[in-house]
Image 1 (cartoon, helix red, strand yellow):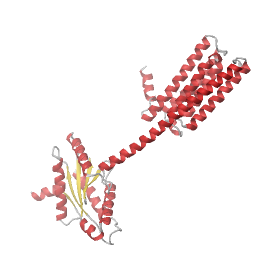
Image 2 (image 1 turned 45 degrees about the horizontal axis):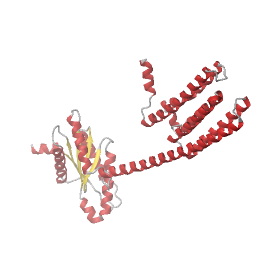
Image 3 (image 1 turned 180 degrees about the vertical axis):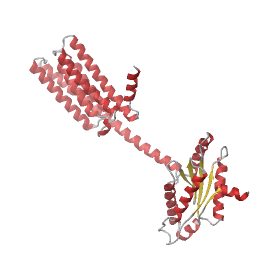
Image 4 (image 1 turned 90 degrees about the vertical axis):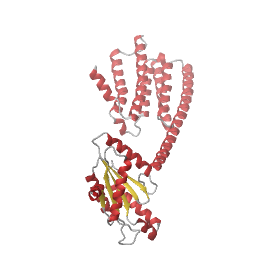
Length: 376
């Protein structure tokens, strides 16, 4: 029992989209189970003119087809198709099996005709207008075919009665199809509107946490990042470091070449900084020409290496908007967070280290521990 339960749990998709597809498929499979039950009951009452061995083989094949769809979803085979929900394929299959039920139990024809309408309504989950035309056309073809076979076998109703029944069914099929099409259209419109809303919300969120010019995180979001890093460090066995960066003589760039050139320099530095850190690290713009790197799980020694790589890359950067030979360098202050200290103290040490780098001639990296040694 435990092994069976474990196997069933393994067949349940983990992806929420796949889980939704599985739920809908099982609903359709459940309707197939109802059909099979009705036919079995009809056979027990002598209403099915088919030998038991043939009946068992026929419905074994039908259920092999019914179970194919949930198994395809369980093993992600459905993702290979244009429509992962396999909507039209499932509906066509259930229309086919329902047609077999009508053929086997002609006395319950009107009962099974209702199942055709249920199949159409299932299409409202995913189908668009073209899909409804395909499924409804297939239903009509199956319905006409089984009626013809009934007439040939002598099991059909009176012709007039059959035509009247057909007209009523077609009227109901058209009506249900129109309703299903409207429901589907509303679903697609709502889905598109939700996608647009999510896009707007994502863009608004990005604007709220990023700097418009460089695309880096802004000061407000930087403080949120630092508080999360501080919370991780407070649990123990976690370190992080900060690199404060100040571009040297940046005001001269603005004065000599204009603010457009200054903006391009800032964007160039942002690209270089992003390439110098890992995906788990963060780069933010404090304002003006000041930036901060937050290096997760990085002690001071590792942060010094990152800072030096960043300094060297900026020094070698090609800035076509400036005169040949005019380089923009960076002064960088580095510090490691100390357990239980306020995050403002960590930032202050990095800031002091930056100004020390500038006092020493700019274009260099200074760690806060170097300042401690000088004080000693």
